[in-house]
Length: 121
Image (cartoon, rainbow, N blue to C red; front, side, top):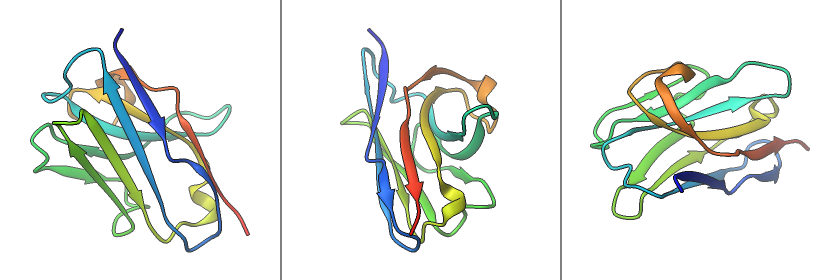
């Protein structure tokens, strides 16, 4: 069974950090672009960050540039999202995805169930 499982979400205060992880199983994802999206209930998915299978090319939403870092470990079939200087507006469900390169959700064909990030004082 092919699946992506996110972890690392939680309730944190503004200005602090979280690291999300996404563990892939069922097949190798070493040739997929991996991405993180965010989504609030009733709203569309919004691109956060993506990383090429080689790890050498990354892209970010303007709102997180300089604060979030996406990385991957192909040997562990895992992708990470380091989130620094968190703000209340970063509060959302965060979803891992695998697929072709791009910043829209139609480029990705495998999705995790998500992990909730809540930033509040």
